[in-house]
Image (tube, rainbow, N blue to C red; front, side):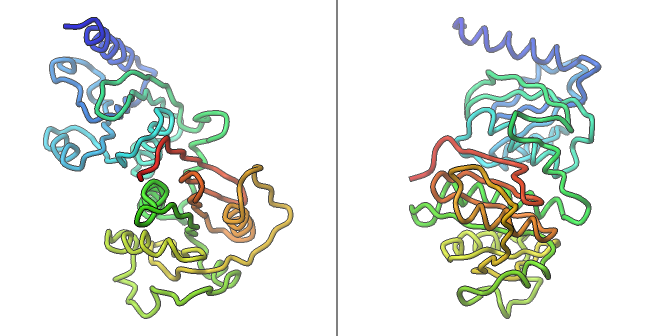
Length: 293
């Protein structure tokens, strides 16, 4: 065994031992190399363990072994961004509650863990992002919000046919959003039955990816039904301030969320970053280290 392999194993054992501490409520393991069964045998932290993996088949295999697992996109995030994505998915699925202490373990895709972070739900993830901002209220369907965050990440990373694209997706308070916007192009979702245009259907999410090349925003109802694509958001609020360097899409998202009760996801065409706006403010930022070419 090499010195590096020996150290990796000792690092994992130390992390598992720390996870047994009574102050730790959950162990979030973010990686596609499951913890060896021998290392978990007899450890009290096993009941705290939640896997975040990038492979659906691996998640199903873990479920068959009575382990908890959720699936996150396989894109090349930094370690901090990987923790953010996994935390958002876990929160949207109700895995954590206010005040829980979460010990997070992660590393690069396909490699052993090399990073450990502790998180208290309701506290800041870092100086700019507060995870509690993702807990948006009972009027929003957590499955819809999570599906749209994952979709926005895909659009930011993949673009369309090799070209970078940016877009806006609003969720909720649809009547006010429609009143404060106008159609720029033909609405590709008009005339389709509601049951056939819900974002919880993978086919509709694929259609949104394809239509993301259109100018304007997507308007989505709280329950996930897509009402329109290609909407110009005309709400303007001079009081809304966005960070320097962000453009018209981010200004439009800030304004529409300040003047209505919707939330808005913005995919940056320049960087592929995804930002979630609520009440005119950025409550979540997800940056990717690389974009697919």
